[in-house]
Each structure stands twice: as structure tokens, then as C-alpha cells.
Amino acid sequence: MNKKVVKRIVIGVGMYAVFAIAVITLYPDTPQNMDWEDRQEYNKIQISKLELGVQKKQILELLGSPDITEAKRDDSKELQVMFYRTHHRKADGITTEDECTALLFENNVLIAWGDSAYQSFVDG
Image (cartoon, rainbow, N blue to C red; front, side, top):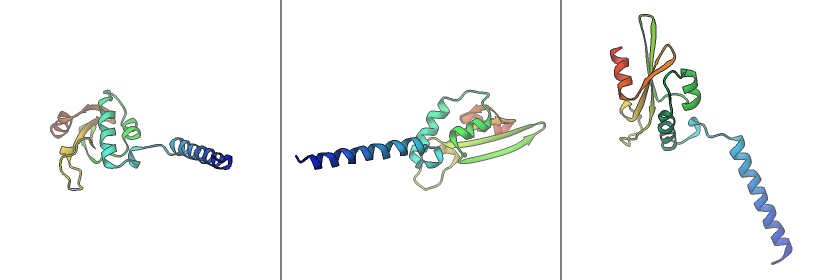
């Protein structure tokens, strides 16, 4: 093979590698930038790692904006439930509560998640 061709191939591969590394490091993959299937899987994985007592601000930084949210004030406490999509049920273009995992916050602190979290919010 001609030395010019080899040189051009090496330069092309090198430029591609620099471009790929730049995109990976300078353009982080956040929940807002993911398609719904990737975000759903990301939510499921991150929620499985949660611990009680985490601040709402930390959850918003980790998972982004919730798909659905409800809030109420009950006596001296503020309750908020945030729903994050974690499992697909129906291909209708609408995210519903039954496709989400609920995260319950009391005074901006995570106190429960899962099916019982929303029930606690309703009863609470």
C-alpha cells in the first residue's frame, strides 16, 4: 500500500478518536438527554441504590425532574411524592403512575419508596 494512503488512514482514525473522546468527556449523559427506554432503566438502577434520609435535592441531581409529582402540607410537615418511570406497561405515549416508582419525601428528606410510598402519602 502507498505510504500516503496509510498516513491518511492513521490521521483519520486519530481524528475520530479525538472527536469521540471529546464528545464522551464534554457531553455528559444526563437523565434529561436520554431516550425514554434508557432513562427508565437508569431510574430503576439508581432507585435500587437509594438509602433513606437522602435529601430531595440530591435525588433531583441524580434522577432529574420527576415524571409525575404531588405534594401536600399535613400539620407541621410537608409531604411530596415524586414518580419516576421504571417499567413500561402500555405504548400510548403517556407515563402513568403504574409505570413509575414513587419516592416519598417528608420535609425534603426521603422516607420511603415503592408501592407503599404512595399509599403512605395518600393516607398520611
